[in-house]
Structures are given as C-alpha cells and as structure tokens.
Amino acid sequence: MQGRDLQEQLTAFLARRKREIIEFRRDLHMHPELAFAEHRTTQRVAERLRAAGLEPVVLPQGTGLICDIGSGDGPMVALRADIDALPLTDEKDVPYRSTVPGAAHACGHDVHTTVVLATGVFLAQQARAGALPGRVRLLFQPAEELPGGAREVINAGGLDGVDRIFALHCDPRLKAGQVGLRVGPITAACDQLLVRLSGPGGHTARPHLTADLVYALGKVVTELPAALSRRVDPRASFSLVWGRVAAGSAPNAIPDDAVAEGTVRCLDDAAWHAAPGLIRELLDSVVGAYGASVELNYRRGVPPTVNEADSVQMLRDACTQMLGEQSIASTPQSLGGEDFAWYLEQVPGALARLGTHGPAWDSPMLDLHRGTFDVDENAIGVGVQLMVATALTALWDGRRPRTEEPVEDAALA
Image (cartoon, helix red, strand yellow):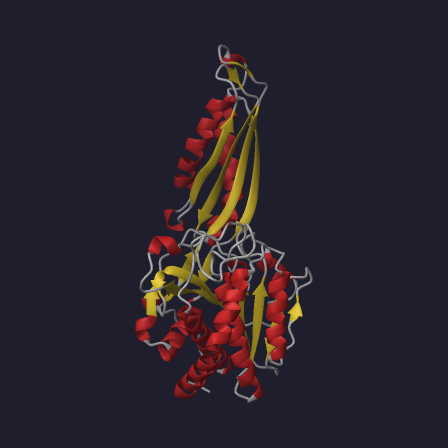
C-alpha cells in the first residue's frame, strides 16, 4: 500500500484515535519514570500492544520492551522510542503536569513513545491485512538519559535481523508540522572526564619544595583544550569544556589534591574513538613539568549519531509523500549526546527531528531539559505519519534487487 491509499487510511486512523493518542501521551507525562525504573511505562505500552494483537517482550532488566510486527523472510526495519524521564521538577501549569516529585518528561520521550506505539498499532492492522511488505520491530528503550539503555537493547538481541533503524526526537526550534533532516553527524559524542592531581602539599612560601597543584591544575585547564585543538582535525568539532575545578581550602596552603571535571564532545567517530588515548598523552605532557601525580578517569558516554544518506532519503521521501515537501527543514548539528548512536554503529539508519513548537508559544519556555518544556500535540500525528511512511518506504526498498551501489545525494548533506 503506497501513495494516496496509505495517506487516506492513516488520516482516518489518526482521526479515530486522536483523543486516545493524546490521552496516552498525557498519562505518560503525568507519570514520568527515571532511567531503568520505567516499570509503569513499560506496562502501559505492553498493554496497548497486546490489545492490538501483538506480543511484546520485556527486556531482561525489567523495563523497556521489544515488539515485532509481521512475519516471513522479508526485510526488517526497526523504530526506536526512548521511554525514560529526566530528574527535574515539572514547572508547567497544565492538567497533565507531572505527579511525581523531581521527575518530568522534559525531553519529549513521552511523545516519542506515543508516536512509535501508535505507529505500531497502525502497522499491525496492515500486517493483518497482508499489506506489510516485511517486518517492523518496535524498540521501546529505557535509560536514554543515563545513558545505557541502547546497549541493553542491543545486548538483548534488539538489532538481530534488523536491516535499518529510524528514530525521531522532539525539536522545539521547529514548528509542529516540520521535520528536520540531515545527512552525517546530527548529534555529538559526549563523554565525561575527571582529572585528579596529587602531591605532598606544602606552604605557599615554599612552592619549590613541593608540587604546586593549583598552578599545575591551571595549566591543565588552559593548555589541555588548547593542545587538543592542534592535534585533532578541526572538522571533527572536538571540544573539551570544564564544568568543575576544585583545589585547596586555605590561601596560604598548597593542597595535596586537586580536580577538574568536564565534558568531551565531537562529531567525528574516529576522533571519538581516539580521544581517551590522546587526552592521556597530552595530560602527562602538561603535568610532567610540575612534579605532580595525575589520574585520569575517562567515562564513555555515547558516540556521535551519524545519519546514513540512504536512510535520510527514505525519511525525505516519506515526508514528501505524507506531509508535503514544505514540511522538510534542514537541521543543524548539535553537540548534545544521543544514545541512538549505538544502534547506528551497527546498522544503517537515521534520526529525524520532529517539530513541536506551537504557533502562540514563547520559544525560551519550550527548550529541552527545562521544567517548562511542552509540545504542540499536533506534532504527535505528524510523527506517526512520518514513522509509518518511513517504515514502509524502507521495507519496499529492502525488497528491491540491488544492481549497483547507491549514490549519496549531495544535496542532502
């Protein structure tokens, strides 16, 4: 089923289910759950999938689930939704405000979950009618914000047999009805590091008799980012930014311990993989002159999310088919992290940005990771149309015989 028939059936489906879909999103919004504690959310999603005749499987750690639609030996496309909330207070004055102190869906994961759930219900109907040209796997992933949930899904076999994967993420910078697309890096790698210097301590009157940790730490804070800018290709958009620096407790005492903590972000996969070793090398070089001992605790976060060109073209084709060419917007690279990247390290796919900005709203009030974040709920139906059409486009593409290598569309880059 393609073209006008699909559009008409999907429009009718969304019209019948609009109230139910919005109520489901609001229910999730009122009952947010943090990473790896999404038990109620998992149960609610599973109930709806079972009611649609599907057989969801809860992940081994007890939150999140996998659900396959269709059967046979055809291609398989995965659609991912993240289900966890953020540890902050919901500051909105709305009837569906969070009822859980210190937890809120301030990143739109309730919307992502609702979109993929409704997409699954519609595709289940298509499968029963024999109109699904392959298989679709729904991935309701826990703990995106931690992160770690994507790797749990992968370890549980979530990508086994998957040929291509797609996801969307709310974007308050785009109007509801718009979809942001980009080939290549769309979000950055994001790691954390802690540098700890140690020495015997001493009196500020005799810095030559000890290791002056405050001075050495100052060199680390200023020289390490500078050195990295000359050792990493500028096109990698590699950055080291400090968020905490601490040393000493008295003005006339050289401390025996000093720390600096920060984040590393970059858009290039090779640079990300090389980062820990390079930072260790440069850190030893900077600190070596001052007689201090140095310890580096480098904590991996997520790799960069790199959208594959053919997958972006499928999203573009789906947008054009269902929403019109005017719905497509270019979207800038973000230095935020997104653990959808772990899936793209193994199978081709792409992340799209779903516009959520309402026509009468103030942009600053809607920013992600703030207690005031909310969405224009018309965006949910847009997301369902996008995910349904993208899944079907990818499945039909996967059934075509391959006669030549695909050519990247430079216009999408």
